[in-house]
Structure formats: C-alpha cells, structure tokens
Image 1 (cartoon, rainbow, N blue to C red):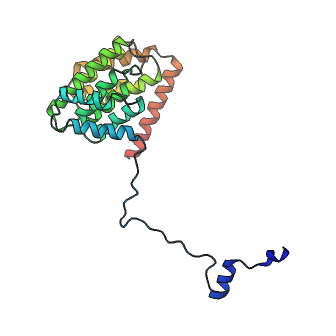
Image 2 (image 1 turned 90 degrees about the horizontal axis):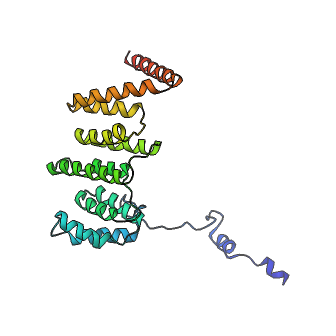
Image 3 (image 1 turned 180 degrees about the horizontal axis):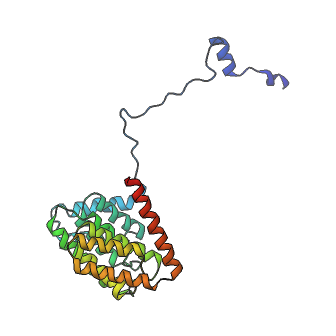
Length: 257
C-alpha cells in the first residue's frame, strides 16, 4: 500500500522523456472569431420574450404601418408582456428608429394597471422623434397633450425632487426639438397651475429656451416667476445662491482671460 505513494505521476514521466526544457504544462489551444467582432449575445435589457414580441410586431406591420394597424398589431404582439419587457420593448423600438411602433407600444402600456404618466418616459419619446419627419412635430405636440391630460387625471405633479428632475428632462427635450409651445404648456401646467416647486435651473432653462424660439412674452413671464421665487426663499439660501453666482462668474472671467 505504501509503495503506491511513490508511483511517478504521468506528468513527471512526460517531462523525463521530453527533457529539462519541456514546459511544465501543455499550452491551451483556443478558437476565436476571425475578426474583431465580439461574441453574439442577447442584450442586457431585452428578454427573449421581448425580442420575439418586437420581431412579431415588425412582421405584422410590414405591409401596413398606419396608426390603426400599428395599434392593433402592438396589442397582439406586446399585450402579454410583463412591465419590464414592455418598457424595454418601447426603448428598443425607439433605438431602432421605429418611432411609430414605439408609440403603439406606449398605447398598449397605457392600458396596463401599473401604468403611470411619467415625464421621463415622455422625454425619451420626444428626444427620439425623427427630426426629418414634418409630421413628427405634430405627433410630439399631441403626445404632450395626452401626457398632460393623463397627469391631471392622476392627480397632477407630485411636489418632490423626482418629478422636478423628470420635468426638467421633458422640458429640455421639447426645447431641443424646437417645440416651444409644448414646453410652455408643460411648464404652465406643472409650475404655474400645478404648484410644483422647481429650482433655479428650470427657470433659467425655460427663459433661455423661450427667448431662443422667439417666445419673448412667455420668457418674460418665466423671468417674473423666477423673481417671485427668489423673493420667497429664505435669506440664507439667497445668500448662498448669490455666492455661487459670484464664484461662477469669477471662474468664467478667469478662464476667458
């Protein structure tokens, strides 16, 4: 039994035959792609169900992509998806440039019990709207009207940091697409009538955007709202804002020189 402890291992026998310069362990041979492409893999945000649903939606609308046909096809292809898969499908359709199909997917989401009108979700639709399509501007305006109606039915804008951040995203997206009237309607509904307490950044973005788009009367009203907001904040906060502005101005002047 003890002699079994001294039986030489196969690797040691191999090294003895090959000589002292033989490698300690054989090198591994691997096979890889013939170009620089990465391995094929499923996207991190799309499940197999979402991928199949998107493919089915494209197939059903290949001959007719009118709004009615797209809505019917989306209800068939996407109606049974879970929330995460449906939201991911909307994002993927926007990324691929199928904006009308993404709108049809949004119509499906509106019928789900978990759906809430989210400014950030609508901001992604505004940002992904095709700039070359003249009808897309009217579609964006209609989308904003539908969002404001949904928000009013849901109780309006919640006074908190989350809705302020999302509102800023939506307003900036609308101004970037030169939809100044739509941005003004959102600002008016959320801030002037809805009472949402926003910060200085929202006022400045709105004022600059309104002036850039030629809406000088609306820009003056935003600046008046900003002046009223500044008069209502506490003196320590106002002093801090003045100090931040002075520091920012000095840094700008220093970088210019």
